[in-house]
Length: 218
Image (cartoon, rainbow, N blue to C red; front, side):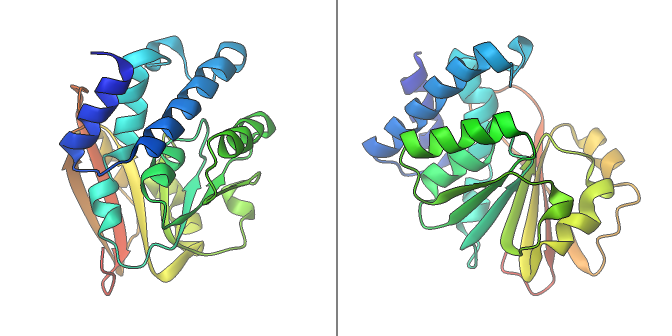
């Protein structure tokens, strides 16, 4: 199964509606990522740097939270912290066009890549902030992150940039590792849920950690 077919089938399995324009936006993103990756090594070869594996391991994995995020009533402003090569922020921005995404990334090279993709793919709902999490002075309705520091270490800084009604969603792997990361994390008085997700074409254990205040609609 070729890349576009993998993407189409993966979107169908996740229940994500799509238009031809959105598929084209993903195509442009991946073409640019493969081009930049050859020079800068954003994604290592053994971590799904190209082709079908790039779609399953990174694009569809990023979109595994779409059913949860799309159901959140207040998600107008979303931050992707430590966005790196644009995961999960860019795939989510493509298929959540009614939300405004801020891709937060401290690396000048990666922010240049992200801005380039946003222009080429015409992602008008995306802005890029060349900042560290600690330096952000704005609040968001939803904060997402993937391949970032352990939750217990970053939770205070993450809660600082989330609106009182807001939600934090962390993309994580094996349940045992998730439990180890959460050991010592002080989420009270917030609700903390661990949700298993199935990523199409990826035979790996994946979970989402959803942290929200008791009154949130998440």
